[in-house]
Image 1 (cartoon, helix red, strand yellow):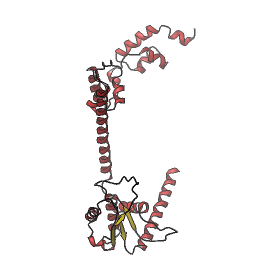
Image 2 (cartoon, helix red, strand yellow):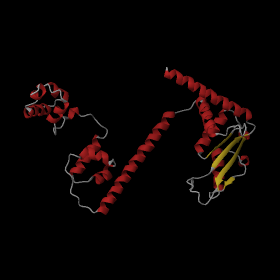
Image 3 (spheres, helix red, strand yellow):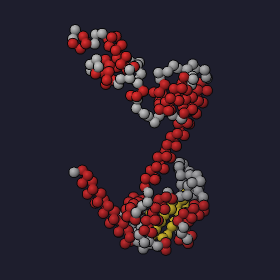
Image 4 (cartoon, one colour):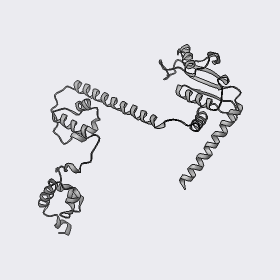
Length: 290
């Protein structure tokens, strides 16, 4: 018999001792050090089914939910019913109540399916609440923008979404198109920061033929605050009947093109600013790597 086997030969005696120490409120480390049990597998077996004292349990934001779930399980509720009641996931419920007896099944398959659907709806609602809260907190982190921050943001925004001169089409002019009204708002704020006047701006709506073009024109005029005379003829997009378009519904207002007149010099400066940002980012990244 090896020394290790001999040391743990009186397993039941060690188990009695370990459980007694556990019930006195000792932690696993303290129990391990008393009888000098340095084998974690053995210690796990000695303490099997013996709950840890309350003081060793870490506080958890879901402790209240866990307790409620256990109470509902003891009242005979299924995972689906508990999910409907508390709005938490079934995977969490399973971890919290798996040691409790299973309730008798007293419902039909149709009833079970209906309960499962309600449970999933509750989970989706909770996820939606969490999603909105995350976005709200993130928005509040931004705070006020300095002029320099808006300037840099606008350069990046234009170079990702604005029209650019190409070797096959060497046009140097500032033109920006987007369907997101918030992008248009930021872009116009950036142009005002650069000193571009409203008289230099021209607007065009691009929209699919099945949408409300007149309503879209009114929407973009109100959003920009521009005079209707600065809006050119709306471009109607034709599409094939088999096209499966996703941009439909009341919220679809097409895209707005914002063009700056006599903007070749501004375009060149934007391109230079962008290359300046790229160079600064590369230098900063190099410093961070070394």
